[in-house]
Structures are given as C-alpha cells and as structure tokens.
Length: 137
Image 1 (spheres, rainbow, N blue to C red):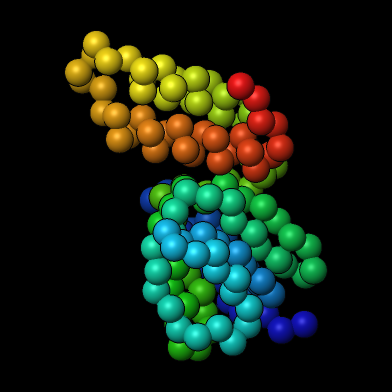
Image 2 (image 1 turned 60 degrees about the vertical axis):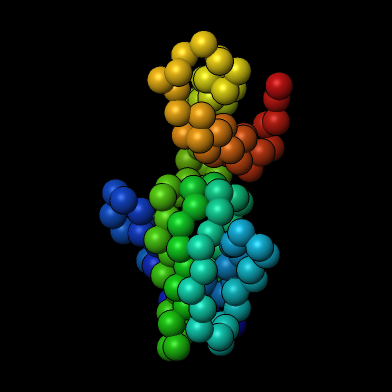
C-alpha cells in the first residue's frame, strides 16, 4: 500500500510523525481527501473531524484548525491549533467547555466577554463531543 509522510505540529510541539495512506481534513470551502501523489497544496483548515489511515486502520481526531502544506515530494505537514485523537478526548471536560461557552454567549450583561472566542470554544467543544459520538444537550 502506498503511503506519504505526515507530520503534525501544534503550539506544544511535534504531535505525530507517521506514514499515512489517507488523510481527510476540512478547509473553509471543501473536504480534502489526501492520497499518496496528491498535488502540492497550501490551505487553511477549520475546526473539524480529521481522519488518518495508517496500516489500513482509520484514526479519528478533533482538529482545532490550522494549515495544511503538501510539498512537491508528497510530504504532508499540518500546523494545527490543537489536535486530539478520539480516545484522548475527555467527555466531561468537553461537556463543561460547551456549557461555559454557551453561557458566555448568552450573557449580554458582561461586556468583557469576547464573543468570538466563546463561539470558537463552543465549536471546538461540539466537535469533540460529536467525534466521540456522545452528543448531548
């Protein structure tokens, strides 16, 4: 099976170095399916589910947004704000983050609340919750 080198970096350092046979990420405009031999590309990525196939096993990740670079030699580099594999996600923490973000978005009396930041926090929390299949109100 053909593969391509994949590196993932976050602000905390090098998260993953592997050879993958498939990568699925979401840009602002479209869903990208990356296979070996993909054309060079640079694109921004949005907060979304990400899929990586390694040795015929698919792993699911919560991608916090960032940038993808596919080099001429096929090397794929992801620079992500955050990333968590589905089994690394703490459901209780994600549910608490969702609740805090929702509260901040409805609190019109506190002018110190950054609504854009609260909205992004809500999107990240919902992405994590959805990814592990534990959607709750």
